[in-house]
Image 1 (spheres, helix red, strand yellow):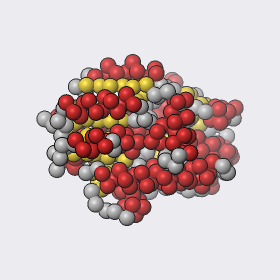
Image 2 (cartoon, rainbow, N blue to C red; image 1 turned 90 degrees about the vertical axis):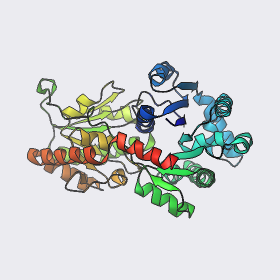
Image 3 (tube, rainbow, N blue to C red; image 1 turned 135 degrees about the vertical axis):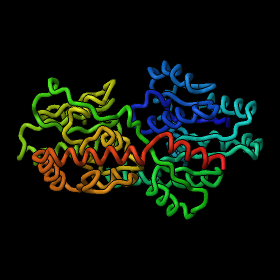
Image 4 (tube, rainbow, N blue to C red; image 1 turned 90 degrees about the horizontal axis):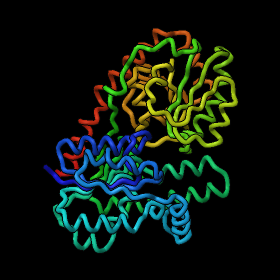
Amino acid sequence: MSRVLYLAHRIPYPPNKGDKIRSYNTIRHLALNHEVDLICLADDRRDLKHRKELSALCRRVAVLPLNTFKAKVNGVCSFLKGATISERYFYRRRFQRIFNAWTRETPYDAVICFSSPMAQYLLEDDFVASKDGSMRLVMDFCDVDSDKWVQYAGKTKFPLNVLYKNEGLRLLRYEQKVHRMFDRSIFVSDHEASLFKALSKDEERIFVVPNGVDSDYFSEHERDVSQRSGKPMLMFAGAMDYYANVDGVRWFCHDILPEVRRGHPDIVFNIVGSNPLPTVTELSAMDDVHVTGFVKDIRPYYQEADVCVIPLRIARGVQNKVLEAMAMGKTVVTTPAAIQGIQVTHGKHVLVADSPKGFSETILSLMDDPERRVELGQAARACVQRDYSWNRNVSKLMDIALH
């Protein structure tokens, strides 16, 4: 049984958003065959109570509260000094002390950092000097975050576009530094890995470990028609304080939904996800647009949806919302960007559209063809059951880490 130290920038429980879904399921499956210690941050104090769920999986757990106001100040100060916002935003001295103590007293076989800001705790001179040569350092970048900031720059105006572009360029230099120090660099898809290879001009020690989905939990169920309004339903799922999701639902509501309603005036659009920003909640003023906020169980919303829409114009890595919808046997209409990291075929597993006209025409054709929706949903579920198992993917991660 190998000993693994896992560092995460956000507490992996509850697994209700993209990064937490990956980190939680990685830990859950690692713990089946390995001894896992966890150090993580919690940017919402209400999440501190979830330490017990993680303690059931891990030998030791340290969850440290992150004051988001102080984190933002630290990030801005870091940026003004020529470094990245991301590093200092997620830095806590107590985190460093715990990391130093645990690595001194435990001969870990591997240290896995989830998200690049966690690597800064391994860049300290004391750790580098004392590191046991048998300890593997694994960086799960997941996505190329630096490129995401550059994409944000292209979607915003001065002065934010300048800030975002500079953060992207600085973060790339930091990512390159981390990659050189670590034994293995992991990305969530071939697309992300290829992008990093091109940006870093380095092809060594870069591997792909996809996300997975729990297809037993996210499974097909008979719809409870008594709960339905009788109206056709569209759905989007995601954290609604995340820029790419906010941009996507606003684009959908303003540029796509009006055209859909020319053919189906009674169609309902559910926006399901936690922490909706004011620019999202205001969309509920539109007829039959519902912004739910946090829901304890998202599956009933999937069950009621006729079509799941993924109108993301900015996307990185593997979108869990796509895998979940596919596992539920739902028809998915998506932009090309949202499926860059998923091995699916347009017309077989999902339908792809990249313009308001394309989206609206595709949705309208599906509303009038329930047999086609069933056909696509069945193929989608079979795809994720075959290719996106967490157990298989975490086993691959440990093979990469230890060999």
